[in-house]
Amino acid sequence: MGTQKPLSNKTYILRRVMFTVLYQWSIHHDKHDDFISGWEIITEHYLSNHGALGSRLHQISENTFAAYSQWPCKEARDSAFSLNDVPEQVVEKMQDSIIVSLEPIEMTVISDKFKYNKVI
Image (cartoon, rainbow, N blue to C red; front, side, top):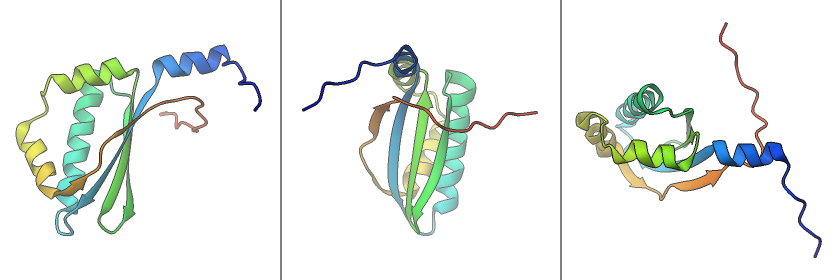
């Protein structure tokens, strides 16, 4: 087997400052709007109050959704989640829309090739 290529400084910096979590849910067919609304409110809460870097929600199939959330580091996310300060009624409404929630997948960014939109 070949030797492993050493990480560049740029890669090391990305690994230290970008933590991503992938989520996936099955949603009740008549609760899509509740789920999406809850996701948007909760995401905005973490963006505004806890330094989250952002999140994207995707629809995989009719009742299956996935999202990924980015944070400066795992510790920032863990700290924000430990506060349990998201409005309880929003969390309950979102949870009531979920049939199954898969275990989150925690990832560290190795290379970032997204084209970011600049706000003018």
